[in-house]
Image 1: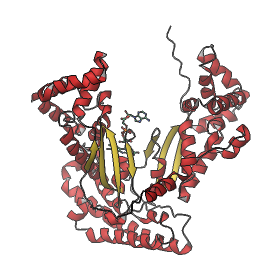
Image 2 (image 1 turned 180 degrees about the horizontal axis):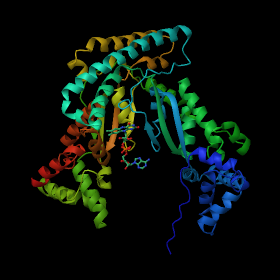
Image 3 (image 1 turned 45 degrees about the vertical axis):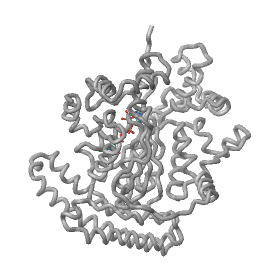
Image 4 (image 1 turned 135 degrees about the horizontal axis):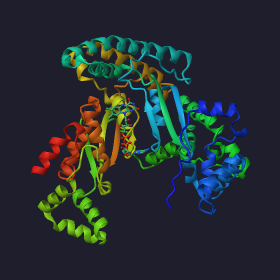
Amino acid sequence: MLKVNLAGYNIDSAVVEKMKKEGWDGKNNISPETISAAYARISRDPRPVDELRADAREEVDKARKSNENIVFKMGHHSVAEHAYLNFDILGLSRFAVESLEEARLCAYTEKSQRYITLRGDYVTPDEFTKEEKKIFMAAVAVQVEAYKTLFPVLHEYQRSKNSGMLQTKTGQNVVEGWAKEDARYVLPLATECQLGFSCNARNLEHIIRKLKYSPFEEVRTLAKTLYDRAVAVVPSLIILSDPDAFRKQFGAEVSDGLLRDGKVRVEKAVKKAGVKTSGPGKIFNAVRLVDCTENPEIKIIAAMMHTSTGNMYADCIKSAVKLGTKGRKAFFVEIFKGLNAHDSLYREFETVNFVYEIIMSSSAFGQMKRHRMMSMTKQDYDIRLGYTIPPAIIETKQVDIYKRAMDAGESAYKKISKIHPEAAVYVLTNAHRRRVLVNANLREVYHIARLRMDGHAQWDIRDISGGMIAETKKAAPVAAALACGKDVFSETYSKFMKG
Ligand SMILES: Cc1cc2nc3c(=O)[nH]c(=O)nc-3n(C[C@H](O)[C@H](O)[C@H](O)COP(=O)(O)OP(=O)(O)OC[C@H]3O[C@@H](n4cnc5c(N)ncnc54)[C@H](O)[C@@H]3O)c2cc1C
């Protein structure tokens, strides 16, 4: 008979501390490790899972030993995914957040620069010399001042342009948000953020191992702090992040190989291949589709035929080709029937991929990086790529103040980068740009379109996602026909279905 137990859930650590203080069943046995240990035994121990859990709970030390053996000796690493942790992270720079959020299978919720007025709190990189700190702080002061000047001007502009929205509190907040999100373009990447970050112990171990080799002091400190907080509750599941503990326990060295020097190896390989850095190349503002699966619509249909017929893939391809253009359109019309704005597309849409090259502001990057079901690789921020200017800055004739903030950042960047070429980036702004490669399957492209082309989305990411969809439609006009923002889904759907 079916039986489902709620085996555990996130509890606020203050509650856990209170339980410990009050002597919850007399033992210090509150740890998510017991769940991992119990589940690890499922494969070999015939007892019901809830009994295994009760057993693990009784003796945390035994559960830890068992995790160490099963996870690290036997290599059954996925067991660590059953233990989940939540972290409040405060006072981390907007730039360091980028390093943390490279890890995909985690949850993040950041302080929005749209909904909260920024006070100009920022992180000063520890690696800077006294002289560099002076240069850095002077530039940041100009940027913060520009933010404070621009915000009321932009707010007034948005209020007069959208006076119809001012009748309600929600409308007023939205209008104010538009002003804030444009003003923040002048703020430095050093701006402090706060976020909620949740992940399982396996991810956490990887994140700590990776971040501790970051070239940035702040990021290395984050790695250490995450380790210090987590080791108190899940020591057996993050042991690879502590080479000393691992050596003591298993008598072997942790090889951090590519985590430690992967970047250097790539640079060496590129150098050996004789490729020279030729500068930023052509600077374009549009999204470019640089690669995609050949005949994507045939491939999607073939994948669907494969799922539903039991035929071989090669035969499905032949059948999809045989359908011809008209037949394929009819196929898509059929499978799209009943689709609504909140549905995700069929899994078979994941069989085709699109690669886009995009030059984007740091602001847009901050949003794009949150889409975890795609691969995004990035170049460093590069002042030769220029910076993005919000249209409202031009319309309110605030370009001079805006440029002053950019110039202050770039001038400080050039000075600091003579000694600290990497950490100098902290003084660049949310408007500065980098070039990225985005590789996404069509199912994720649809998801990005729904959220980011929508009227609620911020204009910069809306432009970029609009560009991605325009390019995608050139390669897959029918399969991508319903990729649009949530707000126009209904009319797009009706139009497509009619003809
Ligand atoms: C208008 C707007 C305002 C926003 N404001 C904020 C804000 O103030 N602060 C902030 O931090 N973020 C904000 N975001 C970002 C938002 O919360 C998402 O992180 C971001 O849009 C990525 O989308 P996603 O999580 O749906 O999907 P993706 O990461 O693109 O993944 C695609 C889909 O895969 C599934 N998926 C992926 N990973 C997981 C997982 N770990 N667990 C379960 N399912 C998963 C989900 O079905 C998801 O929809 C905002 C986004 C929008 C559009």
